[in-house]
Amino acid sequence: MKKNCWVVLLWCAAANVWAQAAPSQDWTLQQVLDRVAVANRDVLAARRALDGAQADRVTAGVSPAPVLSVSTLSINPANLGQGSLWTRPVDTIVRVDTPFERGGKAAWREKVADLGVQAARLDVDDVVRQQQMAAAQAYWSLKLAQEQWQISRANEALALSSSDLARTRMAQGDLSRLEATRLSVEAQRAANERDQARQQWQAAQIALTQLLALDPVAIAAQDAWPDVPATLTANDTSSIEARPDVLAAVQRVAQAEAALSLAQAQRSADVTVGLQFEHNPPTGARLWGVGLSVPLGVDGRQDGPVTKARLGLEMAQADLDRVRATAVADLVARRLALSVAQDRADRIEHQLLPQAREAARAADFARQQGALSLQDVLDARRTLHAAEIDAAAAHADVALALAALSPLSLSQASDRHTP
Image (cartoon, rainbow, N blue to C red):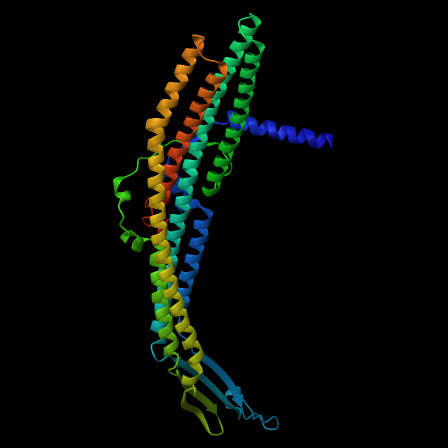
């Protein structure tokens, strides 16, 4: 048990050393998006699905293979004859049967596979879009954690400085023990908040490295908080038709229509043509023959597949309606979230934060002049600290809403390769 305790303590110490001493890798948002498009695990899985769809396309282009059959008949064990096998009195038949598809089955089968490839490629683009959006939000969450960490460290430094000065003044008899104790408690609270901010910072780093398919490493968000383009405030919903998930749903409707046509084409019976060579020495050394076979009752046997294909088309159309409705609702909700977040950030940045700074400066000055109690000064500092935290959170809310709304880099996303 004692050994396990030591292991835990060493692990915690190592984590603290890593957090404080490990050099951070600075990443821009564009670098994050580029990395996600080629290395994210969900994106790679979607590309494997695309590879599978392309393999299905190869299979769809393969026509039915001819069938070669060889048979030997009329074997009489009591009269096998003399000489070579070619002259023995047995009937040997070599036959080749080639099926020919009717009703355009091959063309419809290839079209179904082609549309499946296009839909799978758009699925890759949609996964890239979603993972880039998640990575952008993780990036701004990391930046928020960084700023909260810096704010908490500055607050701790101020609290420690005030506590040290209070102890010195108390030793000189210039300050009461009660006020010195209050400042010491404030310093301890600031230290606890700093530890919590560091934990959130490390959690944000881990979340982003997971999306980037990296081993846990100290990374830092380098970009400044983004500005909101004026074009994003317009109430235009036409852009949803260009979303990869909507385009993929459109392709799947077309694929379902082609699958219905393929099922209907199965009502046409295929024809098998055979060519036969027969070697029968008692009758003739070389005999030729042809054959034709057609299955009967094919039309009535396709009612089930045709009905299933028709239901598949209806489901694809319903899914397209659902995807479009979801895209419109998402767009409206995200624009509202961006508008609210921007209003909040402007209010904090231009009103609350300047007033809190002015109040803190005035409280410190009044305290130096003996016109204000220590509790009032601490309240003013806490108000300023809360305003600084709120300002960082408001900027993060704007960035997160912008990341959920902005069109991310998706050009030729499905043609990229892993490094």
